[in-house]
Length: 342
Image (cartoon, rainbow, N blue to C red; front, top):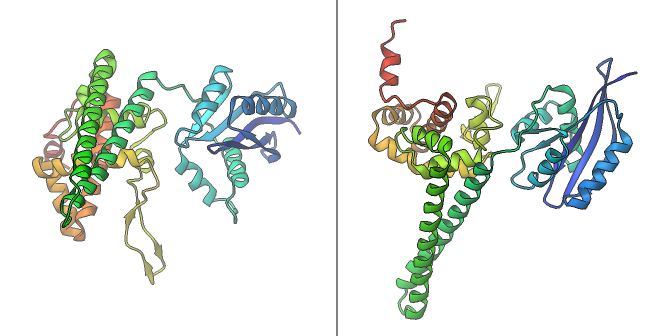
């Protein structure tokens, strides 16, 4: 049988790459024929490349397929990009949904790499493009700021606890206040750097300006969303975006006897979800369109958090649409849409 396609499925961890080689024959049968584990280091990348060269048909280019797993996949992705290999990076939820269709009883690193290899053999995947440097920078800066604000919240709670004690330690209180002042200074520096980076990039500055026409969306929120999605590089539609952010609704239904409470999956990017929390609260308070949507959902389900999450999801979808269409937010869009005759 003639080999039609070759794929290396890669399950990425912090310290290792678990890989499975597969090939698709001209009769459309799939064969997974080699498995190994390599270190997620420069030396490991070289060994992996030699292993692939030895076991594959040189006449057919190998497609490398991996999940977007935090930051651990990035170094190997850049290595493959430098070698001009065919690389596809897919969202984790795509692989997890695909694995549910397979007869996989035990999930291990090996079975994950096998599923990724099968996925690559069965699907026509786009080539991954190295993200722009500015997107990577925005992600680093916005995540650094998030770490600082989280630390500041902890210190503030410690300070409050110390101040309310019967016999508080004045030296501890003073040190906590100095820490808070220091963290405030760091956050201010990061915000200034984010604004400077955006201002220095004319195309990005224009995109951020249009995104900020959406009620409640600030420069910081826009920078977080663009950085975490690499300029929506892997996103093809709004449904995929909400799933990537973990704002998609999951519901357990089984016949007529079991009906679980609908919840959001929370299996996506937590930085996207957290950056939209305060903007959602702001738009619910000040913008009629979002306030009406929130009120309808709360009236129907009686759950305030459900209404808030729906507003977060709508804000994220609006950012995506405006970024892709290079347009501004139309506050009268809903009323115009409702006034169109059926």
